[in-house]
Image (tube, rainbow, N blue to C red; front, side):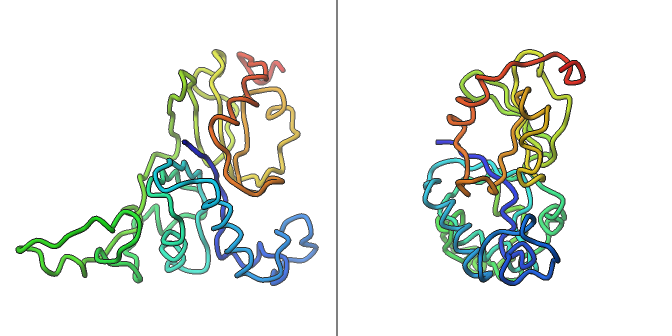
Length: 223
């Protein structure tokens, strides 16, 4: 099965209502008392849906709290096939920084099938760069699923490939704050971030079920 999500913000202190320093934060934070509670909810929301051999398209903003959080979060997710489209908070991953807390010999996800050879006995201690954890994709990515063209980006865009033929535009970044805008309601564009009422990834099948009921227009400005 194929799943899509974004804006997980693992370990993002200010997004957790119980410990946030943001003022008037009822509308801008998640209703968790502690950061650990929020982190656990994020991990459980993914692992309860996305199985080890499923595919997960992630549309940006993976983690906060330092570069170590990237791998600390990754090793808790059971899915081995994460397609990564970067967001505005993914600079360590964009720049492919070396992960200080991950070596090739760690037995997690994509690294658990490594076996040293006679000529490479120390490979287990080799450093791992951030992009190596994922199938790293361009900031604007298209796929075809069940003959349906799907355009993916961290940010919502107003004109996308074959939108006049019914293609879909999936995005994050907005934390579902523009769900009721004219563009998202009347066109085949959808926020797939985790901050919706069920707080979990979407499957592509359920996205298609919703989006294929919507009309598609040649130009958004003619809606």
